[in-house]
Length: 302
Image 1: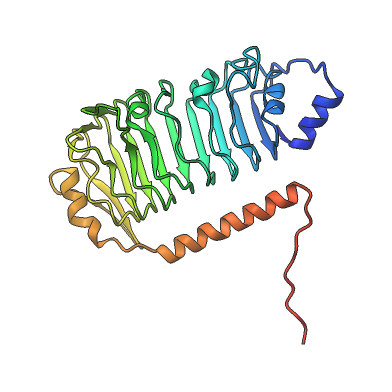
Image 2 (image 1 turned 90 degrees about the vertical axis):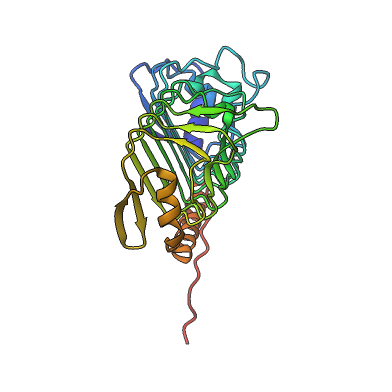
């Protein structure tokens, strides 16, 4: 079920006592301007499992409990999937404010260019199994404290994030010795021109106990995942370089990366052009959704 901000606002204004919709499990909301409207609506969907937000103008999804009553936070107990797309004003998701979001198992974040990090170091993701981040401007995806809580994560995909330097970063107060992704089986890194490593912490053991599938493409700065690495089940690396698509292995993962990655051909111009076109089209769609008339460029007739 897909609804715009105006439709949700109309429901709130004219149908105050809307009955709970117990059978509705998937909702797409577009163009929301008010977080309180979002929670008013979700309060009536106790069995919602999938929520997609697009073109919303909110700075955060969930705020402090003082902004939204505890009665409404956590009502949607069945939420499993959350997708945030083309939310250019979003600066904070708000996982630390809401236990509801921490129950999410499937998380996709795309074209949220003001978002600085996935979550603060105090947040844990004990149930998250799938994580995908596309076309965002973060320098680091998460902190060490958050990463070590990803006990159930099986798939991670990060692509077209030009600012990202490392996936996992360390805060000054964190004592980092070892981090293990116990269930991670598939890791995909694509079009990350400034990525130098998965984790930049020195002398920290990085373990991928069950990693079977590693796909890397257009990451020319990365020659290692970590200083100390353990990948007992990984036998080869899938490297995509331009039109070449091959599997490589040189005894261990870091040795493989060091040998083959300096020769990657980064199609930077194509990637940047594609990203710019996608963002422009998204901006035009958002303007039209908000009621603005598009301005068309017409070539003069001679």
